[in-house]
Image 1: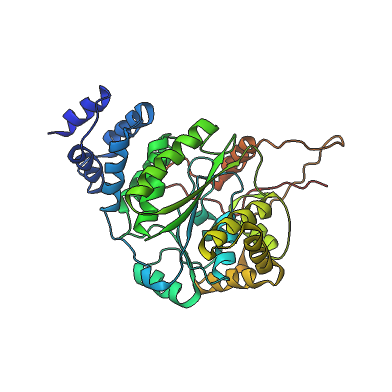
Image 2 (image 1 turned 60 degrees about the vertical axis):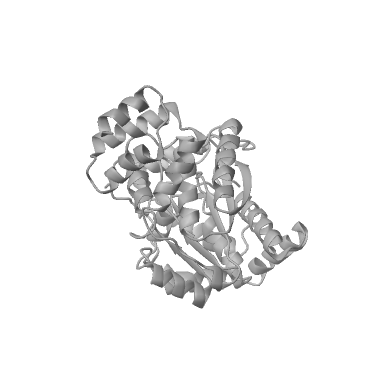
Length: 374
């Protein structure tokens, strides 16, 4: 078995066994396989897909590349993942809602993929914040305040981190099997037993149509069943941006506004997703769960939990900065806005510097767009 023979099988659309997948992917992790070869492998997978067994095997290989957290002794825990959308900052609102209701929320997030911003990029727009937590720091934080938001640690699925970065730089992001493996390996490694997956679908999302969304959900359910994970899934439209602010620091500003009572499509979606998790964990009906979630906004306990989270991880919200170059563009005519093209907005914000075109590109956290509809 050689790297060349494995690639030859991929080129002929033949199925790889566990050992062959492990040789290729672990080879990239330990640097015996270079970017050029791995990019070729990713493009073959992107074009040809993977079988269900290959997906199960690859998930296992990813998980076993690092350690696995165990929160069994920490009480009730929940996790959530979004496949990515324009203006999607749900995690930063939903996490504090759940934690303020004594539902532990250990969340490991990623950086931006393609045109969609990542939760870690949004957090890193806050001066001083530490998102590079060790396993011990995550355990301590969950024990003390019930919530942690961190990037992928060096010990948790390190294979996913390097593949994630390469996918982002090689136009192989929109591979349903690789999306499923990347999402689920992190959930497994984080010790998650109840996970809500928010599959964004539409122009401004990684998943462009319902057929792709349903296939992704099918694959993730397949993986979840192998690891005894209780999976909740939701397909939400992403043709319009979520909320009014797009861009890292601007989105953190809107999170603060939502936690202080601002209402829009972002707040509606977040409360809906939170209610579904609360309903499942507390074994109550949806409306009672919705009232509980809403109460954390009304009484500001979710906002206080958000501030506690940011302070605990060293961040200073008072020093949050946006670009000093501000331009106002007004519509030339009056009317009713029926649709805002999320993809075009995402491309604009990306071109301003909010995303990465290459693996090591720097992000301009202060740029973005605020959509004002009066």
